[in-house]
Image (cartoon, rainbow, N blue to C red):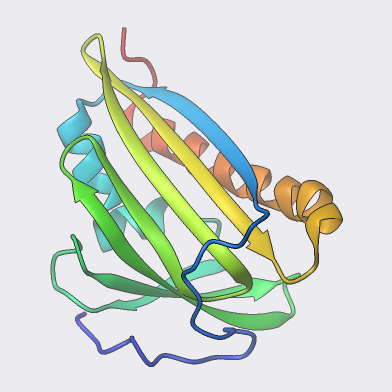
Length: 171
């Protein structure tokens, strides 16, 4: 499934931007999982893992490397408001197995989107954390309200699916 996606463009894919703007918003979600950090980390970096936890309107299109890691890019298609097709390309900017990895949007709806995935040992399981720093083209008010609410819905879904697949707990 290795494809050249660095020049990938789609409707509303936006220009290539990775520089952090002066003002951003953030969301943070945590979940306790029964699986050890290595398993959680590896699961999150597989096409099967990505696909299994994403809402159904988001599908993985391809990746630059057979194994996703430092320097890899991944492309998704999703439907904005279930009507408008959008292409999203993210680059793995940091990779520290099994502690954390960071993906940075190369192309997508946001003017800036940085997503840190963290896996901390917690008993026999893992405390998994999603932290996203973002800015959209719609301004700070819309980011604080509508965009944050949509991201929160997506991350609650992702983490609910992670609990279902990797087991809840970590005691």
